[in-house]
Amino acid sequence: SPSIFWLGCADSRVPPNEIVHLGTGEMSVHRNIANVVSVSDVNLLADLDVSITDGHVPTIIVCGHYNCGGVAAALSSAPHGLIDNWLLHIRQVASACRPVLDLIPDEAKRLRALVELNVIHGALTLSQTPIVRDAWKRGQDLAIHAWVFDIGTGQIR
Image (cartoon, rainbow, N blue to C red):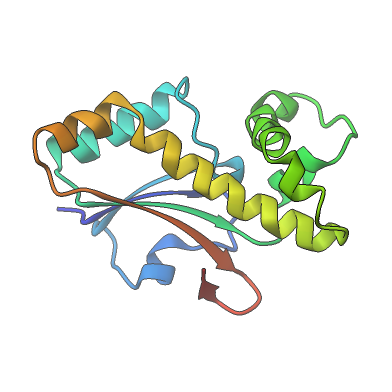
């Protein structure tokens, strides 16, 4: 049975099983654009519920990556069509963290910071879901990690 629930970006440059060195079936994987955690995403919540409640997965990893096109699109003011609805979640993180992001003059570094803030926000949001809170209330062993994968180096932060 899987030992990890992975919520990551849909970007094909971020291969979950290779990053954590696990084989097929050893990890439950949920992917979406820019690894957004939304409590209105019924697909995510269903995956999470099955993994936590039925599978008793002890580890959740929310993994973003540097040079994420979704996060970059969320920072831009240009319209992107339908995806703008999805990117609103990241824009809300950016808005809430504006005082910190405004202190970073370099655009590339600001983008890296938002990638990091997005995974932290995702992990915090997951920790507040009834699925996770109920697991902890039952005494279930469950840890949530916020990771950022550096595509250039292959390292995790």
